Image 1 (cartoon, rainbow, N blue to C red):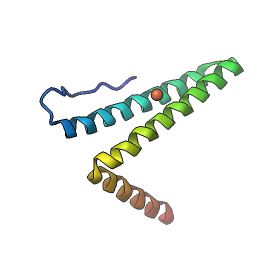
Image 2 (image 1 turned 180 degrees about the horizontal axis):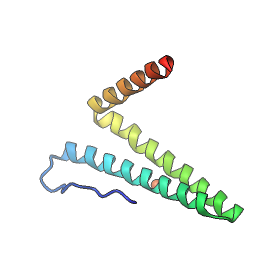
Image 3 (image 1 turned 30 degrees about the horizontal axis):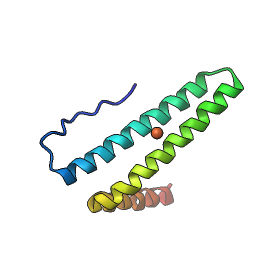
Image 4 (image 1 turned 90 degrees about the horizontal axis):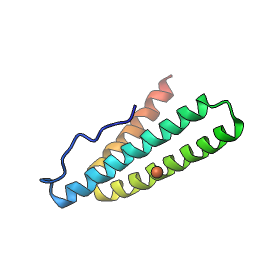
Length: 95
Ligand SMILES: [Fe+2]
């Protein structure tokens, strides 16, 4: 299942629009990576699986590129992501 982008960009201020474009692009990359991973898992041909897994990894890199730029464009988002990382690390220490 692919995500749908639930927003009309027409009335959004340009700076915020750029952030929304980056987030929507990240969603698209994760959707693509997930789709290729699922198709790789369902293929019986080793070469087809190899190609699909390689492309899935490329999509994850694309996700990282958009995230990197979003962290520059939206400092609050970058802080929230860093906070989430710290919280997850703490939870893993408890387990
Ligand atoms: Fe991509």
